[in-house]
Length: 458
Ligand SMILES: *Cc1c(COP(=O)(O)O)cnc(C)c1O
Image 1 (tube, rainbow, N blue to C red):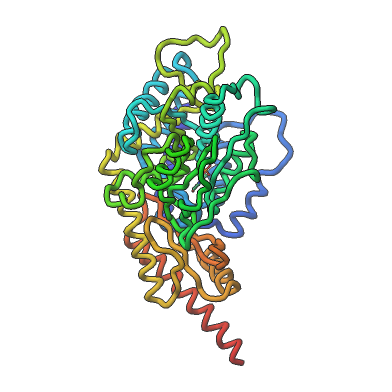
Image 2 (cartoon, helix red, strand yellow):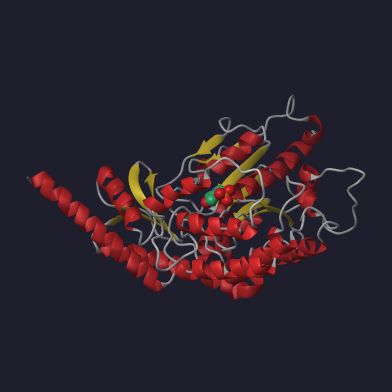
C-alpha cells in the first residue's frame, strides 16, 4: 500500500502541476486513446500499481482541466487544496457517512459545517441541513420538505398516504426556472407541467407583481443566480407576496446563494434568508471536489419528516443523524471536504472568492466589449454572455475557442440570441488567466469574422 500511495502522490503532483500548460479540453488523440480501456475483462487479478498507471497514462490526458484557472464552462468550481486533501483523507477513511454510529467524525463535521454555513448564509442557527450530491438533489430534498409541510397544514400526510387524493398544491416558478427544479418537481409527483410560470424581465428575473394572488396552498420557487445571466429573482418582494398567502418559498441558489457572503451583493441577495428552504452547491462556488450539494430547511422538523426512516437496527441517539436529512442511507462523507474548505479559507476567504470571481467576470466582459463584441447581460455576478454576431459565426467561434484550448467556454441561447457563456467560478483563476483567455478569444473571433467577411465580399 505504501508504494502505491507514493506512486499516486507522484502522479497527482505531476497532473496538478501540468494543468497550466495543457489544453483545457483533451486533444482528439487523447480521446481516441480511451479505447485502450475497452477490452474483455481478464479472469485474474492485476497489480494495483498497474491499474493506477493505466488510469493515469490513459485517463489523465482525457480529463477536462476544469480544476485549472481557465475553465469557464457551465458553472464548474475548482477544487481548493484543503478540500482536495480532505477528499483524499476521507477516501482513506472510507467512512459510511449515513449515521453517527458508522462515522462519528463525519457526523460531527457535518454538524460543525451546518453551523458555519448557516452563519455565512445568514440563516437561523437551527436550520436543518442535508448533505447531498448536488443542487438537483438539494432542490429535490428541500421541495420534499415543502411538500410535507404544505400538505401537512391541510391535514394530509404525504409520506404515509402519497399524492393520490391529496389536495392540489400550486407550484409557482419563474419562466427562467432551472431544469433541475422541474426534475425535482417531476420526481416528487408535483409535475413539471402543472406549474405556474411567471414571466421574467430581460435579465431573467421573475416579475413578482405577476404572481397570481391568493393561491392556496402554494410553493413558490425562486432563483438566486441565473445560469446564463447570474441575475437574481427579487426575493424580498416575492417573500412579501408569499407571506400574504402563507406560501412556502424555496430558493434555488446553486451558485448564487454564496453571494450572500459578500455584503456588496446585498442588492441582489436581500430577502433570500426570509425563505423556507434553500438549495446550493458546494462543488460550484465553495470549490470542493465533486460531488457536493446542500439542502437547507428553516424548520428542520419538515426535513426530518420527509426524509426519515426507522428500523430496529438503526441505533439512534440524541445527535443529528445524517441519514434522516437526505434521500440516501449509505453515502460518502461530503461534510469533511466542506469543513476543510471553510476551515482553510475562512469567512473572508469565501467572500473574497465571490468578489474576485465577479471582478474577473467584469474584466472579461470589458475586454471583449472593447474588442468590439456584444455583451448580452448585465454582468452582476460571475456570468458573462457574449455574442459574436450571427448565430452561425457565434457557434463556429465557440467551437474554435474550444479547439484552441487556451480556455473553454460553452454556448447557450439567451432569450432567442445565440451566445457564448463564460462562468468564473474557481479560486485558481487569476487576472492573467482572464487576459490570456480574452486575448485568445479575440484573436480567434477576429480571424473568423474577417475570414467570413472576405468570403462574403468575394
Ligand atoms: C448548477 C445548477 C443546478 C444543478 O446543480 P447540480 O449540482 O448540477 O445538480 C440547479 N440550479 C442552478 C441555478 C444551477 O446553476
